[in-house]
Length: 354
Image (cartoon, rainbow, N blue to C red; front, side, top):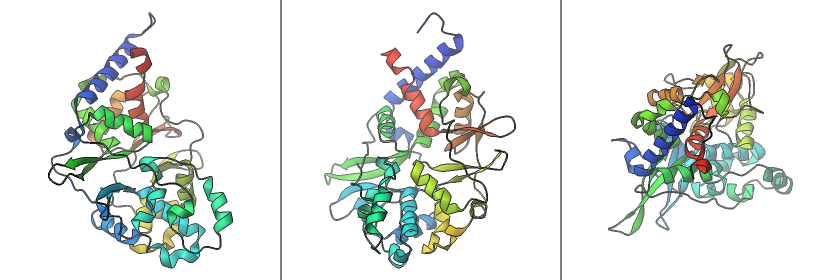
Protein backbone atom coordinates (compact mmCIF):
# COMPACT_ATOMS: atom_id res chain seq x y z
CA UNK A 1 0.00 0.00 0.00
CA UNK A 2 1.32 3.48 -0.84
CA UNK A 3 0.41 6.96 0.32
CA UNK A 4 -1.15 7.51 -3.13
CA UNK A 5 -3.77 4.82 -2.65
CA UNK A 6 -7.18 6.10 -3.67
CA UNK A 7 -10.37 5.26 -1.74
CA UNK A 8 -11.54 3.13 -4.69
CA UNK A 9 -8.24 1.21 -4.57
CA UNK A 10 -8.58 0.64 -0.83
CA UNK A 11 -12.15 -0.62 -1.24
CA UNK A 12 -11.03 -2.94 -4.03
CA UNK A 13 -8.29 -4.38 -1.84
CA UNK A 14 -10.69 -4.94 1.06
CA UNK A 15 -13.20 -6.60 -1.25
CA UNK A 16 -10.60 -9.00 -2.65
CA UNK A 17 -9.40 -9.86 0.85
CA UNK A 18 -12.97 -10.62 1.98
CA UNK A 19 -13.53 -12.95 -0.99
CA UNK A 20 -10.29 -14.85 -0.35
CA UNK A 21 -11.05 -15.24 3.34
CA UNK A 22 -14.51 -16.56 2.43
CA UNK A 23 -13.06 -19.13 0.01
CA UNK A 24 -10.59 -20.32 2.66
CA UNK A 25 -13.28 -21.14 5.23
CA UNK A 26 -15.77 -22.79 2.89
CA UNK A 27 -15.33 -26.13 1.17
CA UNK A 28 -16.49 -27.59 -2.13
CA UNK A 29 -19.45 -29.31 -0.50
CA UNK A 30 -20.90 -25.86 0.20
CA UNK A 31 -21.04 -25.01 -3.51
CA UNK A 32 -23.19 -27.99 -4.49
CA UNK A 33 -26.88 -27.23 -5.09
CA UNK A 34 -29.55 -29.09 -3.15
CA UNK A 35 -30.26 -31.27 -6.17
CA UNK A 36 -28.21 -31.90 -9.28
CA UNK A 37 -27.64 -34.44 -12.03
CA UNK A 38 -24.37 -36.30 -12.36
CA UNK A 39 -23.52 -38.43 -15.38
CA UNK A 40 -20.49 -40.71 -15.06
CA UNK A 41 -19.19 -42.53 -18.13
CA UNK A 42 -17.35 -45.82 -18.09
CA UNK A 43 -14.23 -45.56 -20.24
CA UNK A 44 -15.36 -48.61 -22.21
CA UNK A 45 -18.21 -46.61 -23.77
CA UNK A 46 -17.85 -45.46 -27.37
CA UNK A 47 -17.76 -41.81 -28.37
CA UNK A 48 -21.11 -42.17 -30.11
CA UNK A 49 -22.75 -43.75 -27.05
CA UNK A 50 -21.48 -41.01 -24.74
CA UNK A 51 -22.64 -38.30 -27.13
CA UNK A 52 -26.13 -39.78 -27.32
CA UNK A 53 -26.34 -39.92 -23.52
CA UNK A 54 -25.32 -36.27 -23.19
CA UNK A 55 -27.91 -35.21 -25.75
CA UNK A 56 -30.66 -37.30 -24.13
CA UNK A 57 -29.94 -35.62 -20.82
CA UNK A 58 -29.91 -32.09 -22.21
CA UNK A 59 -26.38 -31.31 -23.35
CA UNK A 60 -26.89 -27.56 -22.86
CA UNK A 61 -27.00 -28.19 -19.12
CA UNK A 62 -24.40 -30.96 -18.91
CA UNK A 63 -21.28 -30.38 -21.00
CA UNK A 64 -18.87 -32.59 -19.09
CA UNK A 65 -18.86 -35.95 -17.36
CA UNK A 66 -16.41 -37.72 -15.04
CA UNK A 67 -14.88 -40.90 -16.42
CA UNK A 68 -14.65 -44.14 -14.49
CA UNK A 69 -12.31 -47.02 -15.24
CA UNK A 70 -14.37 -50.01 -14.09
CA UNK A 71 -11.50 -52.44 -14.64
CA UNK A 72 -9.20 -50.58 -12.26
CA UNK A 73 -12.05 -49.17 -10.10
CA UNK A 74 -10.68 -45.64 -10.27
CA UNK A 75 -11.48 -42.14 -11.44
CA UNK A 76 -10.07 -41.72 -14.96
CA UNK A 77 -10.51 -38.05 -15.81
CA UNK A 78 -13.16 -35.76 -17.22
CA UNK A 79 -14.87 -35.84 -20.60
CA UNK A 80 -15.72 -32.42 -22.10
CA UNK A 81 -16.85 -30.93 -25.38
CA UNK A 82 -13.17 -30.51 -26.27
CA UNK A 83 -12.86 -34.30 -26.58
CA UNK A 84 -15.56 -34.31 -29.24
CA UNK A 85 -13.85 -31.41 -30.99
CA UNK A 86 -10.68 -33.51 -31.13
CA UNK A 87 -12.65 -36.33 -32.73
CA UNK A 88 -13.87 -33.87 -35.37
CA UNK A 89 -10.30 -32.77 -35.96
CA UNK A 90 -9.27 -36.40 -36.38
CA UNK A 91 -12.06 -37.03 -38.88
CA UNK A 92 -11.27 -33.85 -40.80
CA UNK A 93 -7.65 -34.93 -41.20
CA UNK A 94 -8.58 -38.59 -41.84
CA UNK A 95 -11.90 -38.69 -43.75
CA UNK A 96 -11.33 -42.35 -44.69
CA UNK A 97 -11.61 -43.25 -41.00
CA UNK A 98 -15.20 -42.02 -40.70
CA UNK A 99 -16.65 -45.53 -40.62
CA UNK A 100 -14.59 -46.38 -37.55
CA UNK A 101 -14.53 -43.04 -35.76
CA UNK A 102 -17.70 -43.55 -33.74
CA UNK A 103 -16.24 -46.79 -32.42
CA UNK A 104 -13.54 -44.86 -30.58
CA UNK A 105 -13.79 -45.74 -26.92
CA UNK A 106 -13.51 -43.02 -24.33
CA UNK A 107 -10.26 -44.46 -23.04
CA UNK A 108 -8.81 -43.66 -26.49
CA UNK A 109 -9.47 -39.95 -25.91
CA UNK A 110 -7.67 -39.51 -22.64
CA UNK A 111 -4.60 -38.01 -24.24
CA UNK A 112 -6.67 -35.46 -26.07
CA UNK A 113 -8.62 -33.86 -23.24
CA UNK A 114 -6.45 -30.75 -23.02
CA UNK A 115 -8.66 -28.12 -21.31
CA UNK A 116 -9.61 -30.33 -18.37
CA UNK A 117 -6.23 -31.19 -16.95
CA UNK A 118 -3.49 -29.64 -19.06
CA UNK A 119 -3.10 -27.40 -22.09
CA UNK A 120 -0.83 -28.10 -24.99
CA UNK A 121 -0.29 -26.53 -28.38
CA UNK A 122 -1.21 -28.05 -31.72
CA UNK A 123 2.27 -27.96 -33.24
CA UNK A 124 2.39 -31.73 -32.97
CA UNK A 125 -0.35 -31.99 -35.63
CA UNK A 126 2.02 -31.02 -38.45
CA UNK A 127 4.65 -33.61 -37.64
CA UNK A 128 2.00 -36.23 -36.94
CA UNK A 129 0.18 -35.66 -40.23
CA UNK A 130 3.39 -35.89 -42.24
CA UNK A 131 4.30 -39.26 -40.79
CA UNK A 132 0.83 -40.84 -40.50
CA UNK A 133 -1.15 -39.91 -43.62
CA UNK A 134 -1.32 -43.57 -44.66
CA UNK A 135 -2.99 -44.66 -41.42
CA UNK A 136 -6.76 -45.01 -41.59
CA UNK A 137 -7.39 -45.66 -37.93
CA UNK A 138 -5.31 -45.28 -34.80
CA UNK A 139 -6.17 -44.21 -31.27
CA UNK A 140 -6.61 -40.47 -30.83
CA UNK A 141 -4.02 -40.45 -28.07
CA UNK A 142 -1.44 -42.12 -30.32
CA UNK A 143 -2.46 -39.97 -33.28
CA UNK A 144 -1.94 -36.76 -31.36
CA UNK A 145 1.33 -38.00 -29.93
CA UNK A 146 0.80 -36.75 -26.39
CA UNK A 147 1.08 -38.37 -22.98
CA UNK A 148 -2.10 -38.86 -20.93
CA UNK A 149 -2.81 -35.68 -18.96
CA UNK A 150 -2.92 -35.44 -15.19
CA UNK A 151 -6.35 -36.36 -13.86
CA UNK A 152 -6.76 -33.60 -11.30
CA UNK A 153 -9.51 -33.77 -8.73
CA UNK A 154 -10.02 -32.56 -5.18
CA UNK A 155 -11.56 -33.89 -1.99
CA UNK A 156 -14.83 -32.00 -1.39
CA UNK A 157 -13.83 -31.29 2.23
CA UNK A 158 -10.77 -29.29 1.17
CA UNK A 159 -11.09 -25.48 1.26
CA UNK A 160 -12.74 -23.95 -1.78
CA UNK A 161 -9.73 -21.67 -2.13
CA UNK A 162 -7.57 -24.72 -2.80
CA UNK A 163 -9.94 -25.96 -5.51
CA UNK A 164 -9.75 -22.54 -7.19
CA UNK A 165 -5.96 -22.49 -7.08
CA UNK A 166 -5.75 -25.97 -8.58
CA UNK A 167 -8.05 -24.96 -11.40
CA UNK A 168 -5.89 -21.94 -12.15
CA UNK A 169 -2.69 -23.98 -12.07
CA UNK A 170 -4.09 -26.56 -14.49
CA UNK A 171 -6.07 -24.04 -16.55
CA UNK A 172 -9.16 -26.17 -15.98
CA UNK A 173 -12.65 -24.69 -16.15
CA UNK A 174 -14.07 -27.31 -13.81
CA UNK A 175 -12.80 -29.79 -11.25
CA UNK A 176 -14.28 -33.14 -10.16
CA UNK A 177 -14.93 -33.78 -6.49
CA UNK A 178 -13.60 -37.22 -5.56
CA UNK A 179 -13.82 -38.62 -2.06
CA UNK A 180 -12.93 -41.95 -0.50
CA UNK A 181 -15.70 -44.37 0.42
CA UNK A 182 -15.01 -45.43 4.00
CA UNK A 183 -16.87 -48.72 3.58
CA UNK A 184 -15.20 -49.92 0.39
CA UNK A 185 -11.98 -47.89 0.68
CA UNK A 186 -12.40 -46.92 -2.95
CA UNK A 187 -12.65 -43.50 -4.59
CA UNK A 188 -16.12 -42.11 -5.16
CA UNK A 189 -16.95 -39.35 -7.66
CA UNK A 190 -19.33 -36.99 -5.91
CA UNK A 191 -19.82 -34.22 -8.45
CA UNK A 192 -18.10 -31.62 -10.62
CA UNK A 193 -17.87 -27.94 -9.74
CA UNK A 194 -17.28 -25.26 -12.33
CA UNK A 195 -15.81 -21.78 -12.26
CA UNK A 196 -19.29 -20.40 -12.84
CA UNK A 197 -20.72 -22.29 -9.87
CA UNK A 198 -17.92 -21.02 -7.60
CA UNK A 199 -18.20 -17.40 -8.73
CA UNK A 200 -21.98 -17.46 -8.37
CA UNK A 201 -21.54 -18.86 -4.86
CA UNK A 202 -19.28 -15.89 -4.10
CA UNK A 203 -21.68 -13.41 -5.70
CA UNK A 204 -24.59 -14.67 -3.61
CA UNK A 205 -22.77 -14.94 -0.27
CA UNK A 206 -20.11 -12.20 -0.19
CA UNK A 207 -21.57 -8.67 -0.04
CA UNK A 208 -18.04 -7.27 -0.38
CA UNK A 209 -18.13 -8.00 -4.10
CA UNK A 210 -19.86 -4.59 -4.28
CA UNK A 211 -16.54 -3.01 -3.27
CA UNK A 212 -14.91 -4.13 -6.52
CA UNK A 213 -15.66 -0.90 -8.38
CA UNK A 214 -12.40 -0.30 -10.25
CA UNK A 215 -13.28 -0.28 -13.98
CA UNK A 216 -11.95 -2.83 -16.43
CA UNK A 217 -10.03 -0.08 -18.26
CA UNK A 218 -7.85 0.11 -15.14
CA UNK A 219 -7.74 -3.58 -14.26
CA UNK A 220 -7.08 -4.70 -17.85
CA UNK A 221 -8.07 -8.25 -17.02
CA UNK A 222 -9.22 -10.24 -20.02
CA UNK A 223 -8.00 -10.40 -23.61
CA UNK A 224 -7.79 -7.27 -25.73
CA UNK A 225 -5.22 -8.06 -28.43
CA UNK A 226 -5.10 -10.72 -31.13
CA UNK A 227 -8.67 -11.85 -30.41
CA UNK A 228 -9.86 -14.72 -32.60
CA UNK A 229 -13.07 -13.74 -34.41
CA UNK A 230 -15.29 -15.03 -37.20
CA UNK A 231 -18.28 -13.92 -39.26
CA UNK A 232 -21.66 -15.49 -39.87
CA UNK A 233 -20.34 -16.72 -43.24
CA UNK A 234 -17.23 -18.42 -41.83
CA UNK A 235 -17.23 -22.22 -42.34
CA UNK A 236 -17.79 -23.81 -38.96
CA UNK A 237 -14.84 -26.18 -39.44
CA UNK A 238 -12.58 -23.09 -39.58
CA UNK A 239 -13.94 -21.96 -36.22
CA UNK A 240 -13.37 -25.43 -34.79
CA UNK A 241 -9.74 -25.22 -35.89
CA UNK A 242 -9.47 -21.87 -34.08
CA UNK A 243 -10.92 -23.34 -30.88
CA UNK A 244 -8.30 -26.09 -30.91
CA UNK A 245 -5.33 -24.01 -31.99
CA UNK A 246 -6.02 -21.26 -29.44
CA UNK A 247 -7.20 -23.62 -26.66
CA UNK A 248 -10.27 -21.44 -26.18
CA UNK A 249 -13.95 -22.21 -25.72
CA UNK A 250 -15.60 -19.46 -27.78
CA UNK A 251 -15.14 -17.13 -30.73
CA UNK A 252 -16.96 -13.77 -31.10
CA UNK A 253 -18.95 -13.42 -34.33
CA UNK A 254 -18.66 -9.97 -35.92
CA UNK A 255 -20.00 -8.15 -38.97
CA UNK A 256 -17.77 -6.31 -41.41
CA UNK A 257 -17.72 -3.22 -39.16
CA UNK A 258 -16.61 -5.10 -36.06
CA UNK A 259 -20.01 -5.10 -34.39
CA UNK A 260 -20.64 -8.14 -32.20
CA UNK A 261 -23.47 -10.30 -33.55
CA UNK A 262 -23.06 -13.45 -31.53
CA UNK A 263 -20.58 -15.87 -29.97
CA UNK A 264 -19.82 -19.37 -31.25
CA UNK A 265 -19.19 -21.69 -28.30
CA UNK A 266 -17.52 -25.08 -28.14
CA UNK A 267 -20.80 -26.59 -26.91
CA UNK A 268 -22.38 -25.64 -30.26
CA UNK A 269 -20.27 -28.38 -31.81
CA UNK A 270 -22.27 -31.11 -30.08
CA UNK A 271 -25.39 -30.23 -32.07
CA UNK A 272 -23.40 -30.78 -35.27
CA UNK A 273 -22.47 -34.38 -34.63
CA UNK A 274 -25.54 -35.68 -32.82
CA UNK A 275 -26.44 -39.13 -34.08
CA UNK A 276 -22.91 -39.65 -35.35
CA UNK A 277 -23.51 -37.57 -38.49
CA UNK A 278 -20.63 -35.33 -39.53
CA UNK A 279 -22.17 -33.82 -42.68
CA UNK A 280 -23.01 -30.52 -40.96
CA UNK A 281 -19.34 -29.60 -40.63
CA UNK A 282 -19.62 -27.91 -44.02
CA UNK A 283 -22.19 -25.40 -42.73
CA UNK A 284 -21.47 -21.76 -42.01
CA UNK A 285 -21.47 -20.30 -38.51
CA UNK A 286 -24.81 -18.58 -39.18
CA UNK A 287 -26.42 -21.87 -40.23
CA UNK A 288 -25.06 -23.65 -37.16
CA UNK A 289 -26.28 -21.02 -34.72
CA UNK A 290 -29.82 -21.54 -36.03
CA UNK A 291 -29.65 -25.05 -34.57
CA UNK A 292 -29.38 -23.72 -31.02
CA UNK A 293 -32.11 -24.48 -28.54
CA UNK A 294 -34.81 -21.78 -28.27
CA UNK A 295 -33.91 -21.33 -24.60
CA UNK A 296 -30.28 -20.45 -25.35
CA UNK A 297 -29.53 -17.60 -22.90
CA UNK A 298 -27.77 -15.38 -25.43
CA UNK A 299 -24.52 -13.49 -25.01
CA UNK A 300 -23.50 -11.23 -22.14
CA UNK A 301 -21.61 -8.00 -22.63
CA UNK A 302 -19.95 -5.34 -20.52
CA UNK A 303 -17.97 -2.16 -21.13
CA UNK A 304 -14.52 -0.95 -20.16
CA UNK A 305 -16.22 1.28 -17.58
CA UNK A 306 -17.80 -1.64 -15.71
CA UNK A 307 -16.29 -2.93 -12.50
CA UNK A 308 -16.41 -6.45 -11.16
CA UNK A 309 -19.22 -5.34 -8.83
CA UNK A 310 -21.66 -5.13 -11.76
CA UNK A 311 -20.19 -8.25 -13.36
CA UNK A 312 -20.75 -10.24 -10.15
CA UNK A 313 -24.35 -8.98 -10.21
CA UNK A 314 -24.70 -10.45 -13.70
CA UNK A 315 -23.16 -13.76 -12.58
CA UNK A 316 -25.53 -13.88 -9.61
CA UNK A 317 -28.59 -13.47 -11.84
CA UNK A 318 -27.62 -15.37 -14.99
CA UNK A 319 -25.65 -18.38 -16.17
CA UNK A 320 -22.60 -16.58 -17.53
CA UNK A 321 -19.47 -18.26 -18.92
CA UNK A 322 -17.82 -15.21 -20.48
CA UNK A 323 -18.54 -11.57 -21.22
CA UNK A 324 -17.80 -9.80 -24.48
CA UNK A 325 -16.38 -6.33 -23.84
CA UNK A 326 -17.88 -3.79 -26.25
CA UNK A 327 -17.91 -0.02 -26.76
CA UNK A 328 -20.96 2.22 -27.07
CA UNK A 329 -21.44 1.12 -30.69
CA UNK A 330 -21.32 -2.56 -29.68
CA UNK A 331 -17.96 -3.01 -31.36
CA UNK A 332 -15.61 -5.62 -29.95
CA UNK A 333 -13.02 -4.39 -27.45
CA UNK A 334 -12.11 -7.58 -25.62
CA UNK A 335 -13.24 -10.82 -24.01
CA UNK A 336 -13.51 -11.44 -20.26
CA UNK A 337 -13.65 -15.07 -19.17
CA UNK A 338 -14.47 -16.55 -15.79
CA UNK A 339 -10.84 -17.72 -15.63
CA UNK A 340 -9.75 -14.08 -15.88
CA UNK A 341 -12.05 -13.12 -13.01
CA UNK A 342 -10.97 -16.07 -10.85
CA UNK A 343 -7.30 -15.30 -11.48
CA UNK A 344 -7.80 -11.68 -10.47
CA UNK A 345 -9.73 -12.27 -7.25
CA UNK A 346 -7.28 -14.95 -6.10
CA UNK A 347 -3.94 -13.48 -7.10
CA UNK A 348 -4.20 -9.71 -7.49
CA UNK A 349 -1.89 -8.04 -4.96
CA UNK A 350 -1.10 -11.31 -3.17
CA UNK A 351 2.62 -10.50 -3.02
CA UNK A 352 1.85 -7.11 -1.49
CA UNK A 353 -0.35 -8.75 1.16
CA UNK A 354 2.36 -11.28 1.97
